Length: 206
Image 1 (tube, helix red, strand yellow):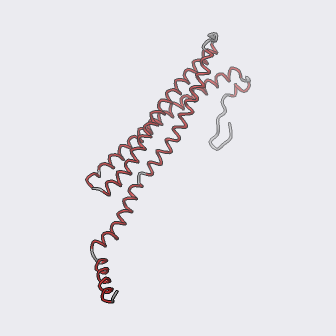
Image 2: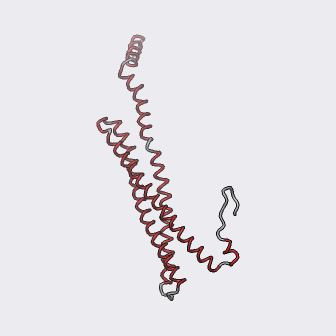
């Protein structure tokens, strides 16, 4: 290749570098791609929160179902017992616990389904952000709507979990009151007279 041809090719390459088309592709598109990827990663925080809540809720639901079966197994044999006061009171306590735990199971199941739906909407939000960025800005309301629906479902699931925790607290208090009453009937008289030991603020028992 002659020197004149090399000079001609160098001039063409230099003019191509200075053209607006090359500048737009090499300078603006790469930052745009980074911004699009950053926007797509934004819902990842809410996706992670949904995943953590799904794991915790699934564990609580499994324990609630196990507790329901245990209470049912304990309640059925006592139905044939003689209707004495002690057995009757224990049956009432077990039935109350069964009511609490079945209500908790239903609330946990509802919360779990809402969490799965919220997770799907947040993933859809991430996908919609990328699609809007590479197609057209006319559909910017799509990821916003998906994100708002997912946030609403997550909020509703949180309220269901709060309600479930209140039932769990009521069940624990009910069972502890029964056990304490039964303990006072069969416990040593000198210890029963002392009453419940309460924990101090900074440790120790008074």
